Length: 127
Image 1: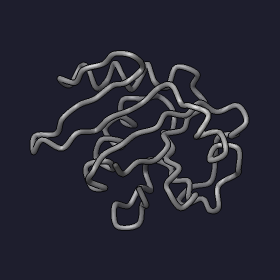
Image 2: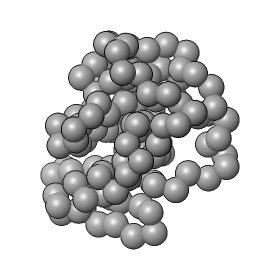
Image 3: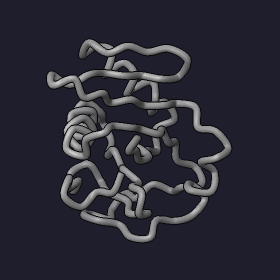
């Protein structure tokens, strides 16, 4: 499955995303929230990251796209893992989640590039 990290300075990042997805017809349980797009594409967010993700989150991003103001401090930031088989749907879901949040929603993609929600580009994000 294709995925990337959603990163924020907010400690309750997963709970914010979970509430948002459930309010839009999604489901949640065991620190996993999931919603289906109208075409059936699933967007799944995991709140509990296992040890296998520690290395990915211990390094600073290789590159930051868009506005670099407010880049989260990775040593204290909160992260969730999100999966979606469609990059376009992934970007759509992150953008609508970001609109509902009071702070920037960041995505750390598979190439180590950090994207603020406003700069996400489905043609360039690597899941």
